[in-house]
Each structure stands twice: as C-alpha cells, then as structure tokens.
Image (cartoon, rainbow, N blue to C red; front, side, top):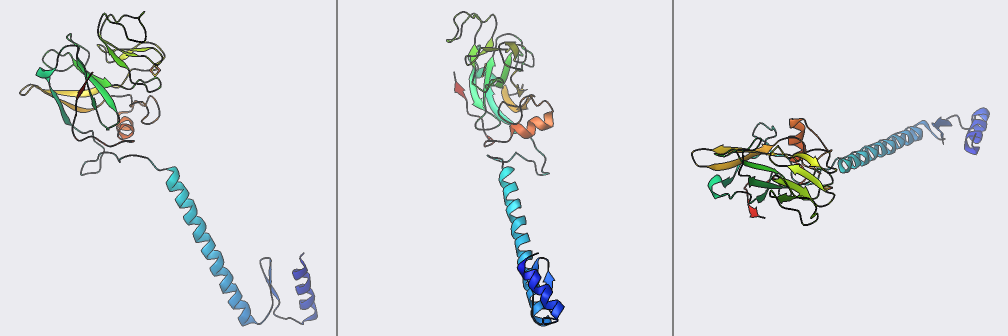
Length: 248
Ligand code: FES
C-alpha cells in the first residue's frame, strides 16, 4: 500500500477527512464538490487517451494494408474487368518476328508472335498468332524469343527445335506452340497467356485479358482462380488504355 493510501486510511479512521476517498489507485481528499470535479477531469483525460490510441492503431493498419500503384479497373457497376484494346493488325505481322507491348499494366511486358504454324489457342486466319507474359515465372527475369534452329546468346549448346521462350537467368524454356508450358529449367509453371480476339472483318487483333496463372510479382505465385488472377494482375502499376508495340 502506498504512503498516500496509508495516510488516507489514517485520516478516515480519525474522521479528520470524512471526504477522503479512493479513485482506482488515486487518493482524493476534499469536499464532495471538489471530488466530483476531479472525477470528471479524470474521465475526460482517460477518454481522450482512448480516442488517441484508436486513431494510432487505425493509422498503422492503413499503412500495413497500403497497395502501391493504380487501383483496379472497374466497370460502372464496380466489378473488376480486363481492358479490351486493339493491339495490331494481323496483316502487319511477319512470321517469327515478335513484337512486345505492355498489358494490362504499364510495367507488365508481353511478347506477341506469329509462329507460322498452328498453335494452341492461336488466333488469326492461320491460328498461329499467340501472346504471352514476357516475365519468367521462376524469379521474374524477362525471357527471350528463340526461333527454331537457333541458340540463345547465353547458351550455345541449346538449339530450339521449335519456337520457344528461353530465360538466360537460370535456363528455363517455354514451349510457345503449346500454351507456353515449361520445357525445361527451374520455372515452376508456364507463363500466362494474353487472351486475344481476332476480328475477321478488319484483321485486327484485340487483347482482352490474361489467362491464369497470375503474372509473376503480382500477387502470390501460381494463383489460378480467374477472379483472383484478375484482382492481382491489375494491382501494382498503371492500367494501360492503349497498346504501344515495340519490336525485338
Ligand atoms: S528467372 Fe527465368 S529461369 Fe530463373
């Protein structure tokens, strides 16, 4: 027991301070009116402290849940949706000459190529035009396009038997004729396909979304649920509103 408590108890026992009371661990002495004033002041102080604590916790949570970059694309109903954008006219493409473009974000590059032979999910009059994320699913390097019968600059001992993607970081290979499945190397899964639509009337090719899995670095690796892929792929950059092609 504190000295104040002992003093107060003695005072109460001697009836010298009949108003001597305790408030929690605090000792209050004086008239009933003074005591009520003190109690009101203490409640105000404790109430202000509680509000300040709640505000600090809310502020911390906001920082922890901050997601950088642009928010996801939305429709007027608020639902997530992929941008649908004209990419290129099929007649302008040369066989085995890839073009690159960013989609759906300005920091997510893709490779589009006319393979010259029919491919899984290929579009165009010959079903040979495909597009894939250019980001390796192993650790996020950009892989290169490897035409048939050629070797990548980093590995002269490998020669592609068919059009492939080859990642020089750790040697992963992707089969571009078969939905960019893994041919070899440490990549745990194929790279995402860019979904394309072909307009027979104009020969224009549109990009309309990304097939699972999610783009490397956008959400946890290997997400396959289409709704989750949409959510993650649209976070972490600016959503593009037009397609700009580059060669190489
Ligand atoms: S980042 Fe492509 S193989 Fe490692």
